[in-house]
Length: 168
Image (tube, rainbow, N blue to C red; front, side, top):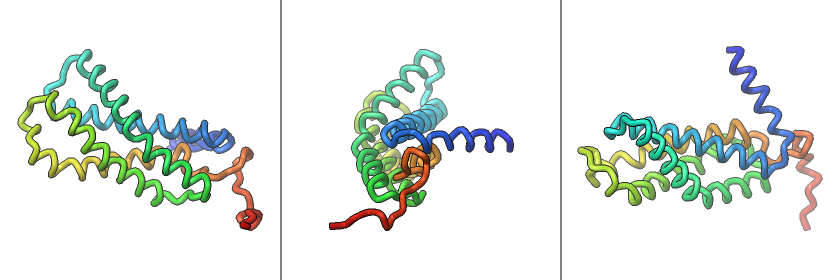
């Protein structure tokens, strides 16, 4: 349990980072986590056993996830920082939507690469939304832990008074 307290106190330091740096760190951590889940699934279901194949698969998944999920991330980042949204449900919504979108995009890119019994279109289109949603929710929780719970905070980590915002 002490490791959890240490992790929480280490992540508290990101509240004092500039918002772009904090969001970039959260984005990288969430992409790394989702690529690790993709790699675990591929090793379990595909016949990838060599270290070289695992490393290539991880870098392939990382570049695809990193590039394809940038538009959803930018929308989530801008809206959460501008409106100071820290609710985890907001990030879960964007994470689930991104996970479902990513699962279909990665399937379209990789369906001809691997030939397994699990590679039929019927099987993959029936399971991909569920798997993508779960991966997206886990990725969103990592992003919220690192960056999202401090959305809209100032440099000292505190939210400004919402009544100070002038609306013309």
